[in-house]
Image (cartoon, rainbow, N blue to C red):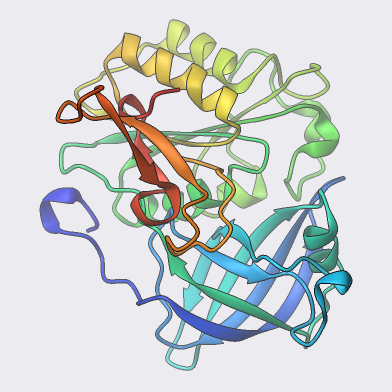
Length: 303
């Protein structure tokens, strides 16, 4: 098991790959899923990420972004011949628009795995996985690990509107509006994880933010801080609100940040995060999100 008391699972040293695209699936109005193949032996922990060169290798900066883009992994499936990685992206600019144009047989240049990953304490018996926007991929990968180790799971996912729900399902108009979980959302059902769905405009599921849906669920069902761990990824405003909630509940929480990372390997020093540090003169210091993150304890971050 990948629990803290047993040590971290083995993972690969970062390396550069010319990965082959196996396929691409559009998930909703703005999200897509890219399946890419790398050599056998690639092994990432849930929460780690890869840096993708979002242009043709021979192209100039004018033909595409010069800097790589960071993407967390939604899954990995390995056999003795290869490892298939799943990358979920949201089309927001030239780089992700380039990814949207990839087809089976194309090549993409990636570096990884990078960063740290989620850890699970030996006393964790239940996990809440809280995601917003395009923050669900590392939590889906984590859910598969938790499922294999029989840790009870419940996911909470929030989007601005129903058209941005990255689910391959036909029931977006039938999600419960009272923050009740459903068990048949394809992506989460694959790892036997029920999910509470919310949208800011009320067009699907609970009407409100994902943290409001979580608050409603906890008010009705309660929680046991001695058994529960919370893992989250999403926009910073969402994570900051969640950090206030878990501090009140006294529940351990780890968050994967979506900080922009130019190099992903600590060279450019562009992805600094302010964290509390009792040994520092002012009580805080900077950490590099790419090297010392992207996963942090929620209470460590100065939001």
